[in-house]
Amino acid sequence: MSATPAQIAEGVAHLPVSIANVYFVGSCGSPWVLIDSSLPGNARKILEAAELLYGAGARPDAILLTHGHYDHAGSALDLANLWDVPIYAHRLELPYLTGKSPYPPIDPTAPGFMAFLGRFLPARTVNIRARVRPLPAGGEIPGMPGWQCHHTPGHAPGHVAFFRPTDATLIAGDAITTMNTDNLFDALRKRKQICGPPTPVTYDWTAALDSVRLLASLRPLTIAAGHGNPMIGPEASDELSDFAANITPPLRGRYVHQPARTGETGIVALPPKPSDPIPGIAAAVGVATIAGAMFAVAAHRRKKHSER
Ligand SMILES: [Zn+2]
Ligand SMILES: [Zn+2]
Image (cartoon, rainbow, N blue to C red; front, side, top):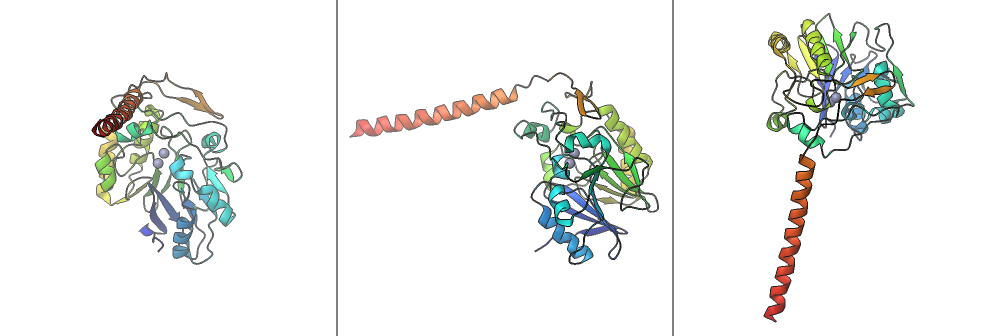
């Protein structure tokens, strides 16, 4: 059975897909767009949800990406091909979506469980060169009249957030989140709280903090982020303001004192790679476990042999 998107504001519906959210913007019977596309392999699920909202065979005007990370752009090309529509992203995000550059690498030495897991996950980008186009420089957003596009770098170089002033609805991408992605238990429960961008992939903390402050200054009443359930009402806006007034960079990490420098063609310079003892420790534990198991099997065989 298809998942039904939840209406969170006038003409805005939210659908959690795997580990990230997608949003549908546009009322039934009017033009609409899809914002973000979750991990690869979710095109069918998103398409079916769109048909529940807009009717069988419904097609958006476009797919818009808040940024190109794998968990936001993963199903974009499949959907764009199914619907035959363009994908839009900020021009500074294009190097990472067209095979020109990898993103700045995950920082496994940053705090939090996601950073820990990041050691064991492959760094991946998606190549959507065939469909992606830059968002218009003038600030108008294809398929989203009445919305503003705010460049909110720090988590990704061409990260953008979408804001509708008439009812203060914010689609924030990963510039802020509404759950603590650094805490395994909070993340599993999706406990609602305003948090900063996911830590290990945030490559420039000065820019990231400025982006949080910019979004707080908009005083959004609906906060719809890339991770976590949307938060709605004046309390959410107040929580974001308090959070932005007190936010500090993480205590440690590769990008805390020096950002990755990026430009029109992708990565320009990276801070030095931090020393990370954990993969070595994990490998040693793995080797010791295998050696122990082999020793136990050999001892068992010897015992059986001597009993004959
Ligand atoms: Zn991201
Ligand atoms: Zn994300």
